[in-house]
Image (cartoon, rainbow, N blue to C red; front, side, top):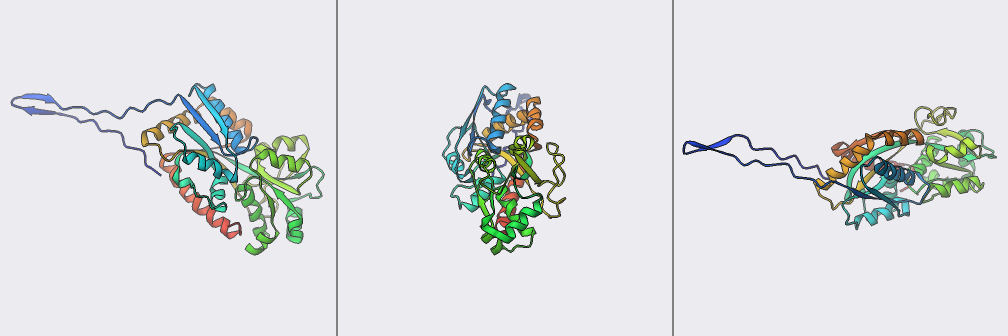
Length: 331
């Protein structure tokens, strides 16, 4: 992960030669070519959290006049690692790829040859609570009912969500771990059905083809409000504005919290000036009224972070997630 180049320091003063002064040559900061067009890679199918965030980013960038165009391309598969492999071969320096906690886990569970450390971090954008839901006619009234049934009946209870090793999968494992299940118990009992996009999980839940589902609040909230899903708990420390009557996991007596963050990275091949230009584009996005509206509409929490701070956060998150995946038996 590279540290942005320092601005050039102007040379001050004059050189006095033979009784006359000659001004010292001045240096100037390198000129960064403005970014007028970007391409946005969403490493997932349409309908999920990455897709929603990527398309919101694209819309605001163009609506606010920050860039002229921001085309979105979906490259789904393997928790975003197919898109990560595509980014590794990308030659356009004005490329942004959505990523986040899901990809951090998927790199480990898929033993991906391409790693996040090989990209150029640009910014963390948002974080969001997860919600555990069941079909409207489910027999489970509380989160405890669901967890107890998994402990007792194991593979007969199915949970769907995003990619294997992602935030949804991690949360399912943490719930069983908090219920006293060992790493081996979790591996044996957790029947998790991964999907490459949020739309697939919605279809399984609405069709009563799974026992429960886990995803970001924004992906399930319309179905909860319509009464076609029932929310059992959210994963944040406090109730969320979109679902104020839904208890937290801690309210339900289980000591687990987890939020899902999302951000953008660029190809690892870009130079420092190109990175700085993309950081400025995303900073302009963050500071716009249009982005504030998107945060409010989707119930996303502003988690903006760039530069060395984002580099440090990302390195720490990779370490923590890898340890958690091992602790709950997912790797």
